[in-house]
Image 1: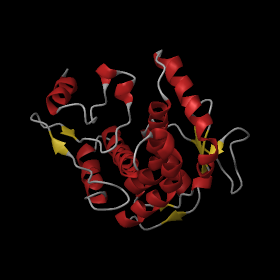
Image 2: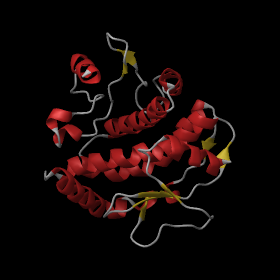
Image 3: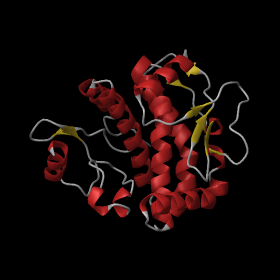
Image 4: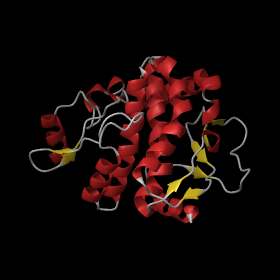
Length: 241
C-alpha cells in the first residue's frame, strides 16, 4: 500500500527527488549518512552543501548559511515522506532516522520505507514528524547558529510547504491549504506556529515562514516568496508578473 502511495507521490511531485529503497535491510551504499548519524558527520555534510552552493551560484557562504540551506533541503523532502501519504491517502507512515539517508557530496536523498499506520489523525502525523526530526534539529543547531525554536519552525514550515506544493501540483490548492491549516492550527509543540495562510489583495494564498531557509543570503534579489523579509506587496507583484 505505502509503496503505491509513494509512486503516486513521485509522479505528482517532480521537485521531490527521493531514492526509494526496497527490502527490510536495504541501504543506499557506502558514503551515505543516515539521519541518526548526522551529528557525527555534520562538518562533512555542511562542507558538501557549501561546495554545491559555490558551484551552482558562484558564491562562497559561511557554514551557518550552508547548514540552513541543507537542513531545508533535507526537511522538505523528508517531511513529504510523512505528509505526502497523509495528504494523498490519509495514511501516516512510520518514519525513523535510520531509514533516511543523505549523501554528503551530492546532496542526494534515499529512504527505506517502513510500515504504515492506517490512521491519518493530525496528531499522529505531528508526532511522527516531531520524533523523526528531533535528532536532525539537534545535529544542525550548533552549526546553524539558530535556536531550537527557529529550527522547529523550519520543520513546521517544510511540512506545510510540502502539502501546499502537492495541492498546487494537483490543482487542489484550496483543499491542501485547508488540510495544512487543520494540521498546524498553532500551539502544537514542538512544531512551532500555525500554518498561517492568508490571502493577498488579488486573492492569491500566501504565508510567512517561521524559520528562514537563508536563500536570501545567496540570492538577495530572489528571496523566497514566503520569506519573512518579503512584504505582501512584493509577493503580489512577483505572483502577477
